[in-house]
Every structure is written in structure tokens, then in C-alpha cells.
Image (cartoon, rainbow, N blue to C red; front, side, top):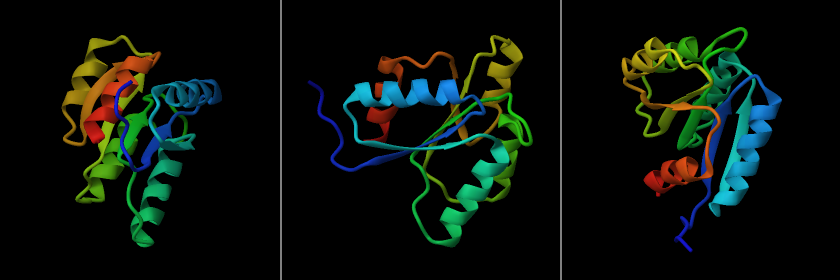
Length: 135
């Protein structure tokens, strides 16, 4: 079995679909990594959460998975708001979407904070790769 990191990895999932959040949590359990999941149902709630972490001088999540289509503040708007905070963040952000549009994949590449685009559903192997890159 693969070595797992010794410290807990903080994962922020930004998705308005409770089923997707549940599936991601089950996939996390199967990776063997010690992961604490925080889920926010839209980009505004996620920005508020990140601001609270910064204000209280807590560490930002090391991995962020962002859905595109959400109410209030969608995935793209979240990324723009996050980048406007101008944090010296060292987290890995990925768009996680059921979108199959090439322009969404290309748009994800245009943001400095976004490391890639992952098509839903998230696989155990792909999540293991993301978590191993953090270690």
C-alpha cells in the first residue's frame, strides 16, 4: 500500500449538489489519506470561509475542488474573487465539472490559481494523484 502523508490534508469542495459532495467524501475515504473535508454550496460561501481563515490566521485548504455551475457565485466568479484577494496561497485548485465544453476547459487554463480541469465523476485514482502531489 502507498505511503500516506502524516499530516491531515484540508480539502475544500465548492459544489451546490449534496450528492456530489457525498460521493467525493466516499471517494476520499477510499484513498487512505487523512483528509478533512469542508463543503460550501456556492462560491460566495467559499470566499467568506477563506476570508475567515485568513482573518483568524488559519491555514488555507491545500486542495480545492470547484464546480462551475452554482447559484449566487459560480465557479468562475469564485476564482476571480479568490484571485482578487491576492493571497500568497500555495493550494491546488481544480475545476471539477460535468461540463464537456472545450471552452470551459480552456477557460480554466486562463486562471493562474487553477491547476487543471477534471471531468465528473472524480475517480479514486485521480484523487489519489491530487493528494499525493500535496504530500
